[in-house]
Image 1: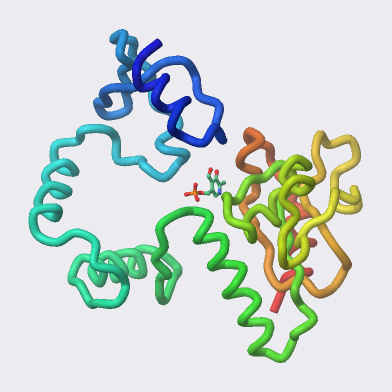
Image 2 (image 1 turned 135 degrees about the horizontal axis):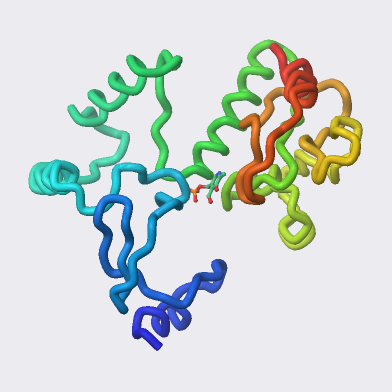
Length: 220
Ligand SMILES: Cc1ncc(COP(=O)(O)O)c(C=O)c1O
């Protein structure tokens, strides 16, 4: 057994199943393990690292920044953070960005922004969040509350109340392999986690009527 596998199994909480090889190098889209076997990287760090491995320009830029200034928190102004925010806004729909460290924090942020917006508009009864079945949104409690998988809902019931319930079937296409939305009540949704497809359970298209219905429920 490779020492990295042994150490991982000994010192890291066993919350992930991993295949039995150790990755030691990456070149662009290719990953190489300790036996020299090559793999096409179709995971990209679960879709958040699409710049490839050991790219010379990316490597140089990271090294330059590390030699200048590393993490200083959100308590201070820095040039790279401002430049990144501007670049994201200029290339997307957004007026402003919210920086965080993980996907699950982004989910928490979305939940909080939606709740705050509903509250600010005096619609305090709008507290429900819609999410796709077969989805995974992250490991924090809010994100887990949106994760329909029974194991999470049973073992880790959300402290602030569940945002989802087992699929009712009302919104699903008859005979479809999954129900696209978890709905609770016909009114009162303040946000929908919407992607047109569910991640974490493979890829499956969401029927358009379900998306339209979710949009109506979550519309402000
Ligand atoms: C679809 C989806 N959303 C959110 C997350 C959470 O991202 P992170 O692990 O960066 O918190 C994941 C991570 O697996 C994910 O697959």
